[in-house]
Length: 106
Image 1: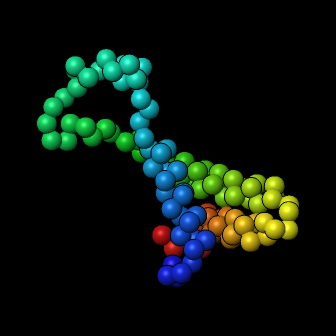
Image 2: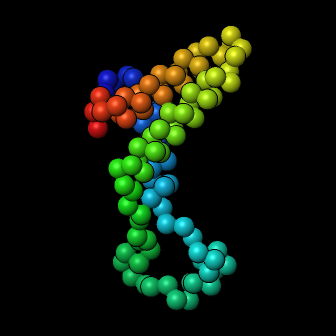
């Protein structure tokens, strides 16, 4: 990736965060009420929770959703004063769509 490609950096950071969030394990009812504290393990690594493992299809769906979100936001910005923002959103979507087409580099 080019060192100064701000659109690519922004799109990839946000998409990596979305992927990270999708891998998170949902919090159970007991954890929300603090009832699991007494039963929680103690020691090094005790706070580590197992992560979900996304399939290749699941990852592609998230990347596709991130691209669609940017294109939808760009379509809603119709005021000429937002032309720079629209261009950036479309550039970010293009970066993500290149990865789906297999032309991007990991």
